[in-house]
Length: 385
Image 1 (cartoon, rainbow, N blue to C red):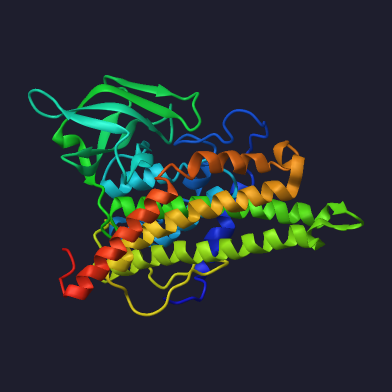
Image 2: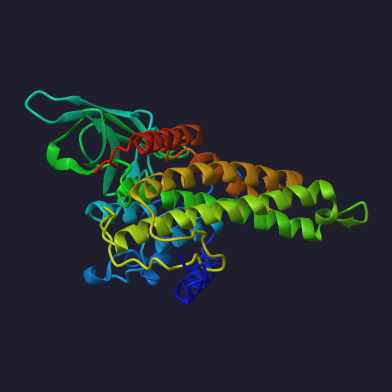
């Protein structure tokens, strides 16, 4: 991996940051922290920059920047405390579904199903249960994570299908299913842990979004601590304030390295033809912009690329919770007012860190995969196909 920042991605980051700075914020301390979903205020920014073409391969008319570019977009959306109107369309493109879809039910992976699928007389299944959803009102269809025959799959369900009820008043929004019929034709993808698969790519985009949320909150805290004075000195010159901010910076840089390395692993695997994702022609030597990702050596094996998204998501979720909490403590009561806007990052963290699975469950999943790899290596067993 080339650690030199890619000039194209550096300029892309600048363009995103400048454009997102003009997006109106919601300063109120109650209600949803941002306007989320496919028709949120960030949609005009992403359309203007043609973000839908970033990950699309050059052969399909896109820019062929790979998952690294999608991760960068997600990070900048989180850093600006904006709703993530990118991830739904990116996931839809991965599985060949129309744009304007909203993901639902990913918080139940990998341990179970918030939405269950029971066999239906005459064929097909009926979906029952509740799940969080990206957009409660503006989505044309829902991409629902569930299990069929004990295998996680992604099912496309029209937003107006029988038995579908949206509850936008919840934070995050919730969709409920009551005997909603689906057929085999509605199954658009398997949600396995294959490198480059839709689940791996979605996890890395979410990890980058959480990284951006933590980075944005930390930036506000550092700025406030640099101007606020106590005991005739700046707050950030006091060890009790400076040390937590420094530890948070270390955590952010380590998490950024893990997230962008995960994206590079998938891009590199697809460039060599060993990945299973839909995007080809990725730029495997890309950095992450102002701070390059971390990674060394040649293109890794499937096992390393397979666990990297899980590790990145678990680490980013824990980093977001720790860094945002420390930032709130540094800013004191002003963090909970409209003066700094830090409360938006706090409420986003509460809603987003468990959206694609709780960190503890993700760490167990990654640990089980590493143990399985160790056993196969010890006994000389071949890697799974």
